[in-house]
Amino acid sequence: MIAAGLAVEKNVLQEELDEVINEFSSNYEHHFDKLLLRIPKRFYRGLNPALIVAAGVIAYHDIKARRLARTRTPSKSSASSRRRTSSWGSSPRGST
Image 1 (cartoon, rainbow, N blue to C red):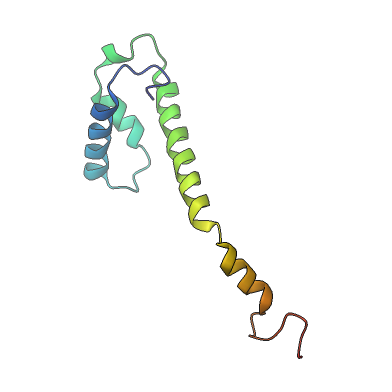
Image 2 (cartoon, rainbow, N blue to C red; image 1 turned 90 degrees about the vertical axis):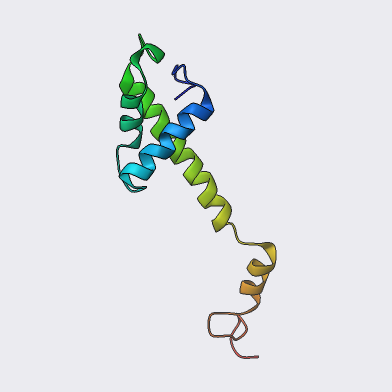
């Protein structure tokens, strides 16, 4: 949102966002809309509010995707373990 032109310090924006999340729950769909309503318009004068909200949504999804990718990456040892045994606990080539 700041990169889209919102002239607010990062820590101030984060504090406001935390308050919105606490007030409306983490599953609320319009966090960034509510956040922008709490910011005085002088901090985004001349900018399209929808673009600022969209920038917040995009940044949120980018961060979420990166975190999920890190947790889904199997370790090398677990991958080699899966290759050695099938789901039935036998050799991948059948009975030996």
